[in-house]
Length: 191
Image (tube, rainbow, N blue to C red; front, side, top):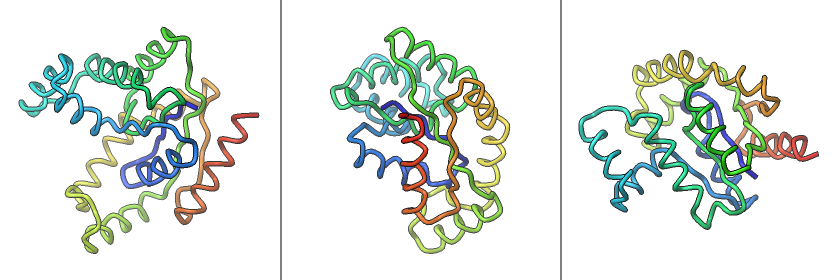
């Protein structure tokens, strides 16, 4: 099973990816983790990415695709994978599509976690105040991240809808209920 998780920052993509990884025995591919691993392994592409990140620049799509290409060759991806944090733009989605087509594989589904942004902001603030959040769990930072999501990543919704791979789940439910909704969305895809 090959999946992409979509949703704004704080929607629960990482939480749901961890649960899906356990249930389906597939690899969770987080772009941040992949970049850090490529850098630590000192692969040629990892060294290029490290140089770019050290300058404070965003890693270009071509480098990200190369890192993903290397990563999905790993044995733990043989049963499939979940991409979390990639693609973020239409050009990235098109590059991913080409990468997979070159390997004669395709995405099984793109699951969008739908959340109310106002409630999401409250969630993030509470998470930060409890000490359980990420370093960037600040209201102003989240507002900026949500704006970037709306302008750059949200267009992927229509892109994947037009490809017939988009599934949506209500991310405002409990973690367990979102997981059950994910399973149902994936069962629908499998039939």
